[in-house]
Length: 252
Image (cartoon, rainbow, N blue to C red; front, side):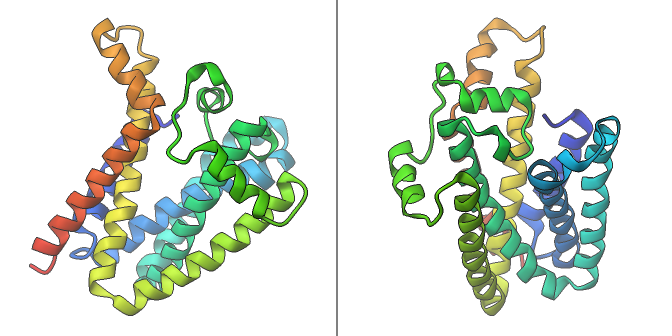
C-alpha cells in the first residue's frame, strides 16, 4: 500500500501529467518515465527478481530498486523526450494489459506465484470471494480469452500475454508519435489519470485501516477500495477532464 509521502508525490505527478502534459511536455516525459520505471521495477521484482534476493536484503531492494530505475528512466526520458514518448506509450499499454490478465489469473486460479506488486490486503481482496469484488470485465468473458491464448500453463499463457501486449503497445506508440500534438494531450491525460487513480485507491486503503475513521464513512471508503466501478468512473472522469483542459488551454 502506498505511504503518505508516495501518495503526495504521485498526486503532484498525476496532476501535472493529466492537465499540463502537453504544455510541460519534456518535464512530463521525465515524470512519466519515473512512474513507469517504478511500476516496471515492482513488476520485475514480483515476477523474477525478488525470489533471487537474500531475505534480509529484500526490504531494502524493494525500496531502492524502483526509485533507482525510476530516476534512470526519468533522466533518459527528459534527455530523449521525443523518443521517450514512444517507449513510455509502449510500456504503459503493455503494463496495463498484462496487469489486467495477471489479476484475473490470481483471482480465479489462486495462483500467487504470478502476483505483481500488491499489498497482502489487495491479494486477499482479489482471491477471497467473500469480498464480492466487482470486476469491470466479467470472469467468463476473460476466461474465454485466456482459453484462446496459446500455452498449457499460467506461465506459458503469461508469456503469450506479454508478447501480444507488446505488439499492441508498439502499434499504439507508433500512432501516438505520428499524430503528435493531439495524441500527446490524450496520452498524458490517460497516464496522469492512471496515477491519480492509484492515489485514490492508496488513500482509500489508508483510510480503511484508520481506526479513528467515523462509522458513517466506512461504507464509502469500502466501496471506493473494493468496488472496481468506482475507481473506473473516477479514472474515466479524470481522463475526460484532462483531455478537455489540455485541448482548451494546452497551447497557451
